[in-house]
Image 1: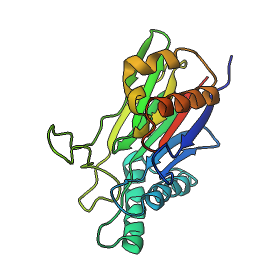
Image 2: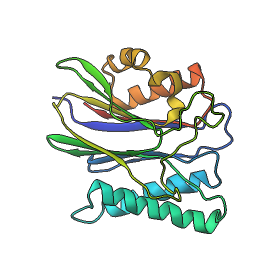
Image 3: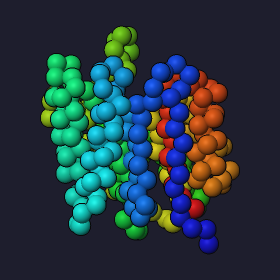
Image 4: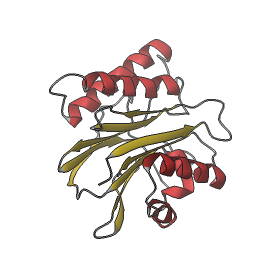
Length: 223
């Protein structure tokens, strides 16, 4: 039987001067996360780093906090960054956290990063998160987020828990994955049954080939 593994690949993209994405793979293979600093606000890289660092600190204690409390603490960490580095405009980041709690998976999410689950038996590929963009057609700010860590309003994260089947491949990605976020384009790559690092590298290359206008981070876990 193949061992459970996790791996990630990240790139600043073709048009960005820096990479404001951060990711986290728990050495115990229990927690996995991606965060994407909001480019329209200052200190995006600092915001995403603060969220990931807060996550890392919180899960180092036993028992770790529940997902809602974990997100609230990450939110406060980003708000602290805003007070220090951008007190007028603020700053923010997305955060998507996956937790393996056998036989279940838990996912917490805010922003427009993405999570997918590919199951082999029965074969299925589904999206695990929704986008928190404004998404009003004709609105020049339709890609703006209405929910993110660091927002001045009260923060609510999305949460779900689902039963694993033991053969699933899970994928976390920031929105720089672009065209590959469409299930019909993503499915052929996930069905190749590559090891996590090879699959993450392949998806990164393809997302850059198909656009690569933004930072992109891809994290894969599975067997």
